[in-house]
Image (cartoon, rainbow, N blue to C red; front, side):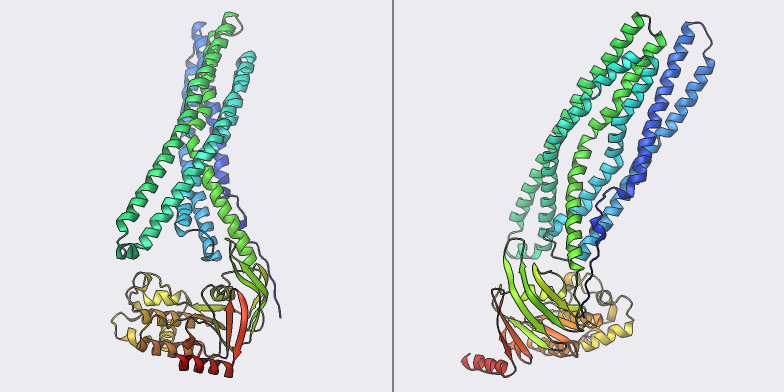
Length: 555
């Protein structure tokens, strides 16, 4: 029976600001309200000036001005709160989606761990700042001047026409600067990711660096990467200063001068009052402020856009990978079937070529061949970690792996076992440990299931790590078991215990063993010999015994 299923991964929805859309809209609306209240205050001041010049009582206007200013102060307090809320919502949403993508795609994303961590930390924070700070300012900065220009038109329409002609020059200049910013910010983000990846590599490989006496040299390389990041940061700030200089010096001064000149001309012509002339000058200053804010936070937008592009690419590729992975073909429980399967890695290396292989339920099969023959690639396809470039892989149910060097999470024995079966009771955990020849070891320790394993299992011996991994695999209860030479790195006593644990683990299950040593193939029903990604030959029954006898006799 064959079941094919295709489900789009949630990461395929790459609207990065979805979680903050309402807050962004609210920030823009509040920005408009703030600008209009400011314009109302200016018009009130203008009317009060005209009343005073005309000898009229302006008390009511001053009271109204106080009310407007208080309202504006209340409204002005909202943007920082909304900005923080938007950034928090976007960051939380993106981190959840990134983590979900990483967990679903698995270890074969093709990206360094440090780069992924950098995207989930500094990258996500940059997108949060973009959504919370820059985007509302960008929308408000481009639209608010038009609202204020309408207010100016209410006072004196010829002045509004002049200001509307001048204003578009600022966005055009910012657009030109944005192209320069794009390349600088992309280099900045790439350099930051590289530094994060190298730093994490150094931490993870610190024991090796110390053993090879390379820690100081590696530290010098990290310092060089940090210096490159500092240089890219300075370039980014330089371009931002150019934006500030252009907006603040040229256009702010130009717009204010234009507003003041028009006010003077129109006042001299008797077209407007003194109060209205003051209003035009003040509105001219207000009109340029939203655009100045864009210039001040231009670097936030540049870094945020570069980070958004990286995260969007990551989520898109993860969505494609997960969609591909969800295309599964399920056969009889415990069966494994490869139909004309080929696989090529991203660098162009062909690992498997037109491979046809069928493994029956309950069969014990060894995969042998020289390094690079395709054994690990084939096993990873059975586990669902890789998808074929061509052909079909059909696996009857879930498969579980016991690798040559199992990974244990920092924590206790119980925690590491519960990863395989979160709701397992203590009795079930002890039963799995008993079957894996590990219960006696833990019974001699005071903490039992609460015994710490240390980071990556460093508190346990190599054999104990392997047996704990087997206990974990037993809890999965998968019909297909893949072993990667689990006895190659342990002493003879541990090997004997491990073989007993493996026999218990594989009882009634299909077993595929990646064999690096010929001694491992003893007891197998079949041996599949691979070479350069091709199925070279298959040995069965008596052929295996004869091969082992020949090897022992000649060695």
